[in-house]
Image 1: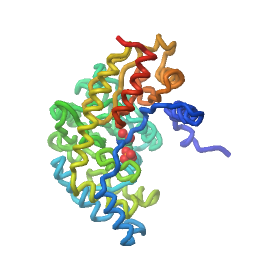
Image 2 (image 1 turned 90 degrees about the horizontal axis):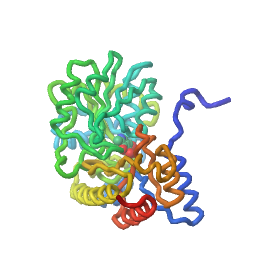
Image 3 (image 1 turned 60 degrees about the vertical axis):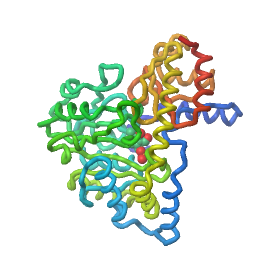
Image 4 (image 1 turned 30 degrees about the vertical axis):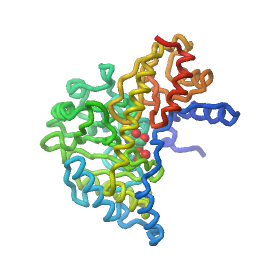
Amino acid sequence: MQPSQRANQITPSATLAVATKAAQLRAEGVDVIGFGAGEPDFPTPPHVCAAAKEALDRGATNYAKPASGIPEAKAAVIEKFRRENDLQYAPDEVIVTLGGKEALALAFMALLDPGDEVLLPVPYWVSFPEQIGLAGGKVVPLTPSRSDFRLTPEEIGAALTPRTKIFVFNSPSNPGGFAYTPDEVREIAAALADRDIMVFSDEMYDRLRYGDRREHLSFANAGDGWRDKTLTFNAASKSHSMTGWRLGYAAGPNWLIKAMAKIQSHTTSGAVNFAQYGLVAALTGDQSHVEEMRQAFEQRGTHMAARLNALAGVSCLQPSGAFYCFPDVSGAFGKLGVSNSTDFCAKVLEDAHVALVPGGAFGMDTHVRLSFATGMAKIDAGLDRLEKLLGKV
Ligand SMILES: Cc1ncc(COP(=O)(O)O)c(C=O)c1O
């Protein structure tokens, strides 16, 4: 016996080798500074925890009904989209899932047939290609010509083929740490007009935007017709520091949400019942924690990018969204005697005891990802080590 072709087609995570090595070094007593974690270092707000605890004490421990989300959670999701994204949805146009990840996986499974193409901007979130492949789709990676990662409407228009079924849009971006402006979103939407495609808009980081890119426009709001041709994905994970709660959601046309819910009912039976009351509190209760985190991330990101740009052979954009720096480190490959991001990260881990994520996992082998969802002291300690290893410009 052996695992299925489906399981075998999944690429072992390129990040795993570095993570395993980091864990091994730590077990040996080495003080490793990690910039890998894609999760806020803030606690979940107390009022969110209290709501879930109350639900638990009340006995909300049976199956969530319906599996696609309890009515209170769907109402909270509808309220979030109305209040923050100026989008109106009915309960049968939303689904609550086990993290944003389940929503995306269900959607690819519900829409793709074998051979359908998915246009995927590079750099991409690490799970996109795997989820598309598992659903039988064909990934068509689209690498931007500009060094700031932002695709032009012309580049996107030129990459479409008659087989393109989905365009994946992720702004603010993991791992790119950048965000499109509302005008840019409208221009991209215009380039896709008249095409029989769906847009999967991953807006997990919509509330974590910085500098002159604070304003978020949902793709579904990018012009006539896009509301019904866009599936919008979000989660409590990043904005409300709830990664371990596994609470995500999506909104879009009823025919697709219904298809997703059918698959969900036979795979996970949906998000955890009492946890969904935490989602209600997060989306409809006091929001001050979101802005507190956002301000801290902005400060940290600005600082981290400045320090990265001071390193020899490293070039980093000022982050405008999410909580990642994604610098080009290819100018430092020679100094470390390496020729790709995986070897670069392995060498940095070995010599400086700093754990980074290789950009190859996101489709860009010249770059590495550092999360700044971590304290300033740790950021400085890690950057001090990198400075010692690579030197200053
Ligand atoms: C772009 C993007 N989409 C989806 C997800 C999945 O989020 P969740 O943890 O809610 O499943 C992540 C998490 O890292 C992400 O960065």
